[in-house]
Each structure stands twice: as C-alpha cells, then as structure tokens.
Image (tube, rainbow, N blue to C red; front, side):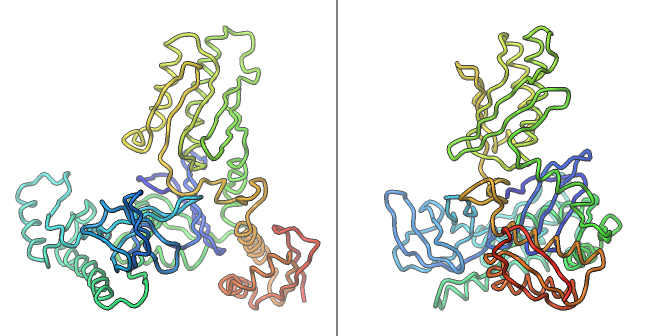
Length: 466
C-alpha cells in the first residue's frame, strides 16, 4: 500500500506475525493502515536481462531475480537496448492487481541523508538552505567526494550532520553502485544487487526522527527501531514497546476499525451515510441523507449532508488506499453555491495531494462529481480479502490472523507443548513457512503439533494442551 508524505500522530506497529501492520492514529481515529508482507521494494537495484523488445509499447520486458518480468520504457534507459542485453535497472513502481513491475535505468540510490545518481554530475543542496557561505562550503565538500561524475543530492535531514557523517553516507551509497557495476561486468543470471529500504520503513524512520509517538508490538521490530534512533544519536523516549496481555491492535481498537474499513456503508457524524462500491474500472460513492434533519429545507439539508460526506469520503479513500477514477453521487444541490462549497470541501480535505496525486474533474451534467487519484499499490480490500471472492479473507490474511490469535493466547498463559488444529489448506501453508513455525516455537517454547481438521474454515483454529 501507498505510503507517501510526512505523517504526524501516533504510529502503532503490529509485528508479531508474518506480516507487519502499521496504523497511523490521528485525533484518536485510524487514518492510515499499511500492510507489509515483504517482497520487492521501490528502488531495489537489479541486474536484469532484456527478454523481449516491444516496439508497440516503446518498451522492453526485463527478466529479474525472484519476481516477474518488469517493463522498461525506452525513454527510461540511457542508450539503445536489444534482446539478451544485460542492464542495471531499478524498480520505479511495484506490481499490483493486474499491473506488473515498472523499471527505470536512470539509477538513483537513496540514503538517509543523500541520493546518489551515478554519472549525474550535479551537486544539489536543499532549497531551504539559504546561507550562501554554508552552501558554498557544502558544495565544495561534496565536490571533493565525487567519483566518476556522480550526481549528489543532499537531503534536508543531513544539514545538521558532521562532514564525516556525510562522507560516510556517500561511501556507503557508492559501494552499492560499485557492487552493481561489478555484477554487470560479469553477468551470469538476473540478480537482486541491492535491496532498497521500503517506503514504509522510510516513513517510520521519519516519524521517529520527528519525535512523534510510536508503539511497537514485536520484540525484533522494537529493538531494530531503537537501534536506528541510537545510531542517529536521537532520544528513544517516544518509542514504546507494547507489553499488555492483549495484542496492540486489539488494545487500541484498531482491529475493529479495520473491520469497519472493509464495509461498504459508513455512517456520517450528525446523520446520513455513504456507500463505497469499488470496482475494476472505477470506485462509485453514493451519499445518502438517511432521514438526517428531515423536514428542513431540502437544499440546505443536501448541502449540509454533502459537506459532512466530503471530508469522510477523502478520509475513507486514504484509509482504504483507493485509486483510479472515483465518481461521487452527492445529494442533489440546485444552487451553484452548494456545488462550489462541496468542491471546496473535497479540495481542502485532499490538501497537498492535489499537487499531483489527485486530478479534479468536477461536476458532470448529470450531477455526479468526478476525480482521479493516482494508484499506488493494492487497496486495503484487495490486500486483505481474497481476489476470487472479496467477501472472504485471503489465505495470507487468514494465516496471519491465526498466528496473531495464538500469540494472544500465549499472553494469557498458554505455553508449552500444544496441538494446533487448522484447516487442511492452512496446515499445508504453515508447513511451507518455517518462519511462521519459528514464531510459534518462540511464543510457546516449543513448536505446536499441527493437525489438519477438514471441519475448520481457513480463518478458524483450535488449540489444545498436549
């Protein structure tokens, strides 16, 4: 799911199962949810081989290591390409739903304090740095580091760093590029050369470095994040490890909020409700008065309910990570003033996203309101529920739910040798995941015996003492 932007508020991280779930709570309400199951990340650096040239798409298909072939547009590679050619490429867009991985040959290796563009030549400093003397000093220092005409873009976060720390960051990024060059010089098979830090991990680090509250359920994740703060010389007072008898998301009401975010109907504070109906081509959203303020002037009531709906619609779109064409059917408003107020409310709620991610189409002749939002990863619905039948949890979701439920049972005192009864499909899936078995072994002290029970649904289990 899409990450993007700088986020403030309380960050809750559930890292007790195979997947990591990160919830952003603002004003005591779940506003964003990310589900991370590993896999490729944006800006992963690959040595790939061109498998097929597709002139009709002005692109080439590139065979990669561990993931499906990626699409490399001709205008994103510095030079001609041909079938069988070995190329260094980065993932510029992750695959989701029916869309594959998109690649670029214009390499940009990201660090915490700078971005390295091999052969880019330019030295770029943050625009917020206005002091001419400091700009000149930093430019001179970065030029002294440059190798082979590297382009170096310094991030704002590095302005407070010592010069030794900046030089160390450059050497680290330069070593990654040199590893890629070495792989290209003697290629044998497609290879993942350098694993990039995921967008989600970058967001978490920015949140922590900003000093905002972060609560973690999961020892390994907590230790890792505390190490990040220690390495940067930052306080860890705002980083807390959850130690309650309940799992973090249950304790904070996040599980209930996730369940609500998978429902079509959303009630509005003050009366009325909206219905959200995502489909392949577009997402339709219907605004309903539902008897709110019955008896009032119809125009005034329509405007009031629509304005309540506007803010909630944008909140739900972000929470559910809905992208593509979105069509709203608001309550009918006869006046131009009412329609203008509705559009202003939509624009205000989206805020900075209007700079590129959201394109407003406005009202149609039939009174519908249209806009598009850039797709960035799977929607919450697609991430959690089965793609074959969106009313049932996917097997990945079910397996993680079972693991979390068993961790919760451990915290109530159930430990030692256990027998776990689960559906045959889940038993088979669990047997293939040694990392899952290890999580359960760590929790109970010994891995439970797994027995397939055909009478159980995928998301059900039974735990008995041996």
